[in-house]
Length: 350
Image 1: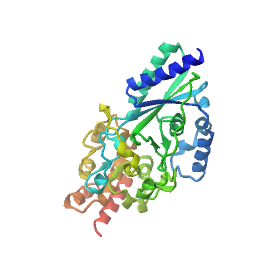
Image 2: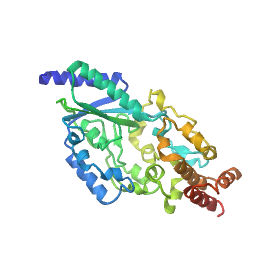
Image 3: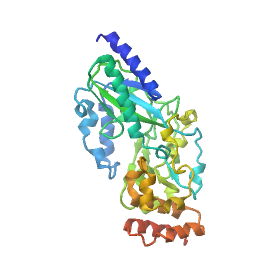
Image 4: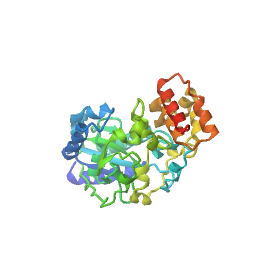
C-alpha cells in the first residue's frame, strides 16, 4: 500500500468504528517511555497496594510490540457508558441506599467492546488482506490511558482518568494493536488548568498530588481490589459506596458535557442505581451469583460483597431495619464478614 492508501484506510477505520458503536476512534504510535517512567515511580512508592499484576510485565507495558510482536500502531477507541447526564452527589448522601460505580451497574463491558473490536478488525482485513492485530480491553499489561492520550482521545487528568473536553470522562477504552503503519493522530493536551475539584472531593484523600493516586486509599481499590479487611480509618469515609467510587468524576467540570449512552447493555440491572443497602445485604450467595452474572461486580466474590455492604450499613442512619440486617449476619461463617458486621454494629451503639 502507498502512504495515501494508509491515510484513506485510517479514515475508513474511524468511520467503521463509529458505525460499530464507538463514539471515537484514534491512532497512536507505541513510544510510551515517558508514561512508563511515571508508572515506575508509582510502583516504587507501593501505591499499587495488593495489585501485584501492576508490577508485572513492565517491559510489555512500556513496549507494546513486546506484548504483541510486530505492533507499530494502536487503534484506540472509546465508548460512552453514562445512562444519565446528571452528575449529582445526592445519591452518595443518601446513606440508606447503596452506591455502585456507574460503570458497573449494567453488563460487563469487556465482552461487548472486544466483540466490536473484532468486528472492526474483520472490516480492516477485508480492505487490506491478512494483517497482524490483537484486541485488548483492560485485561492485559496495556497502558491504555497513555495510549488514548497519545491518540488524542483525551488527556489524563488530575484524577488519573482520561478526560475528553467534548464529553467528559464517562467512557470505556479499548485498543487494537496492529502492524499497519497508519498515520497517527495528534496527542491531546491538558485542560485541567488550576482546577483541583477532583482532588479536593476525595473522601479518603487518596490523591498524593495531581495525577498521582495512592490506590491503597482509593475507595475503588478498597471495595474491588482488596480482598482482606478494610483499614478501620478508611471505613467511615467510604459512606455508602459498596463497589467503586465516582466522586472525582461527578465533580469534574468537563462532565457537564456528558452524553447519554445508546448501549442497552449498560442499563442498570437489579435497580443498582437506586436500591436499599439491606436489600442487597440479604442476597444469598446463590442470589449474588445469579444477579451478578455478566456483571463486573461478580469478580469481588460474595464475601467481599457482604464486607463492603456491612461497612455501608455501619455508616447508614441508624434504624431498626439497619441494625436487624446486621444482626442477622453477626454469626456469618466468614471471619472477614463477621469483623465488618461487628464494626458496623459498634457504630450504631455510639
